[in-house]
Length: 355
Image (cartoon, rainbow, N blue to C red):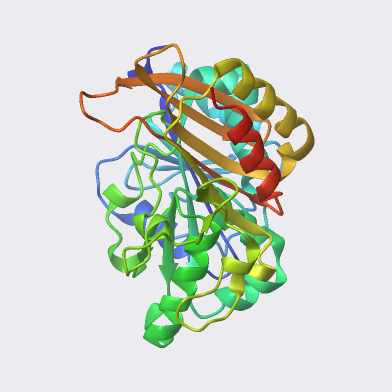
C-alpha cells in the first residue's frame, strides 16, 4: 500500500469538558468534502446529536448525512481500525481519514503505540498528529490534579485552548506559558470551535520525520533575546534545571510541580552514532514509559545529511534529512518531553555521545 493510499489518522484528546464533542460535531456536520471516519471511544447518544446521524442503523458503524462515518467502540481500538480498513478495502465504506476521540481521562500513549506496534494497523494507517484540547477556564486545576491531563499536553503536536473568552487575558497568558514549558513542540492556538480551520486539524505531519524541530522559539529565546534558561556551565547548553523554570509573568514556579516537562540538548559538535544509540537505548530501557515525545535534528559523524530522530516511549526511529547547506551551522538540537525525567543524566549522556 503506497503512502498515498494510506489512511491518515488523527488522535483527538483533551480533558472532560474541553470541547472535543463540539469540535467533532462541527467536523461531522459540515459539508467539507472530506471523507472521514470518526472512532468514538465511549459512545453514548449524548455524545453526538442524533439529528446528524443517519438513523435506523443498528450497526457499530453509523453513516453521517455528509458522508462521514462514525464508528463506536467499547473494546479494542486495534480491532476497530482493522474492521474499518477491511470494509474500506472491500468497497463497503469510503473514507480516507480517521479521527480517534479518546475518553477525557485517557492516556494517549497506548493509542499512539497501536499505530507503530501493530503490523496490520501500521500498513494501513499513517499517524498524522495528536490534537489536545485544553479548557482555559479549568485547565490550571486539571493540570494540577490529573497526570492524564499533563500527559495529554506532553504528547500533543497541536494544542487548542478553548473558552479563553471566559477568563482574563493574563490567565490565558499564564496558561500558555505553563503549556510551553511542558511541551515547546506543540503549536498553541486559542480557538472558538465554531471556526477552527480544518487546515489546523488535518495534515499537520506531527509524526513525519522532517528537519523542522518545531520547538516554540520562545522556549529557546526569551523576549529579551537571551537564552530562556541560564546556561549551565557544565554542559554549555540549556540545562533546564528545575530552579530556573519560573513562570515569567507571575513568578509562579509552575513547572516545579509539573511532572511533565521538557528540556533541550544543543551542541555544535557531531554525535557518534554508536554511542548515541547505546545511550538512548539504555535510557528507554529505564525511562521509556516516562518519555512521552522526543525529537532531534542531529549532526552525526559520517554523514553530510541531517539525521532526524524521533521517539514515543520505547519506540524510536531515525531518518536522513536534507544535506547540511553550505554555510549552515551544523548543530544538534534534541527536545525531550517526559515525566520527571532526570535532566542531568540525559544531558550528560548526550554530551558523552559527542565525537
